[in-house]
Length: 115
Image 1 (cartoon, one colour):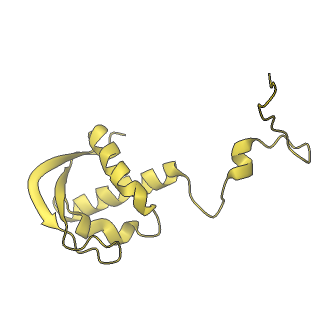
Image 2 (cartoon, helix red, strand yellow):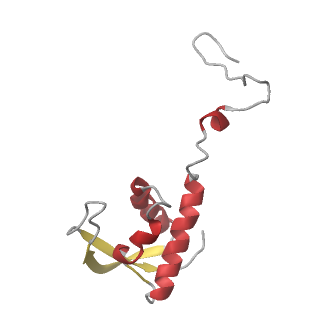
């Protein structure tokens, strides 16, 4: 129940629109869409590279599909879901567009799509 100072949402035209539909940006995909795209790109890259996942090999496929700030979070999520595992290998970023060129980055190994 709404009290003083608590906003009460209602649709202007009575169609029952909720807050999420009011702020939804149809031009930008959902985080879950981006996650599925991220996992698909990882799986395809791993298939092409014998299970090895170097960001230099898949970064371009993610551009324009996954928000740049989500990539690190998605890597963490993929590790937590046991989709990828860290290796002892590192590579050097070639990402000049994202201004990460020259920075070391861990190489991962694909473990499989279970989530």
